[in-house]
Length: 174
Image 1 (cartoon, helix red, strand yellow):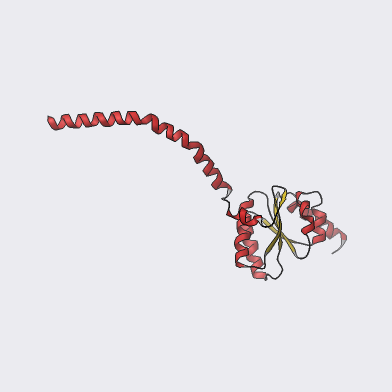
Image 2 (cartoon, one colour):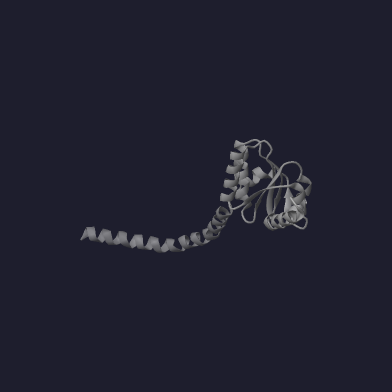
């Protein structure tokens, strides 16, 4: 690889991973090609990206990016799984894949631009996804209003039921 190719690769890596606020550094030593292909497919389905990187080029690419906080973990065979939006979906994919394939190990993680221990993968994978959290929040926000409407409509409902009972009783008597 000549200097211009390296420069182009560094620019491409900086563009792809440099802007991602969420990333996982993965040691993939011992994994076979069909398993890597399946992992890539699952990561893509989660709306994330996966790159196998050469450490020296990756370190140049992330020099001014949030991922630079994990630079000491760019040793050995390294792949980067990154997400721009939903870190929980990516964590779930990596956690599930790690259960079935013990060769995949997370070296380090970056969440919201801050380094976190690799052991936090399990905690992230157990969290509900962003749409689920938004739905729960909306449900909690609507709950007091629903209870207020129910409380305010209660006396009117009882009045209507009482009037209907009196009307039914008069209809039977007549």
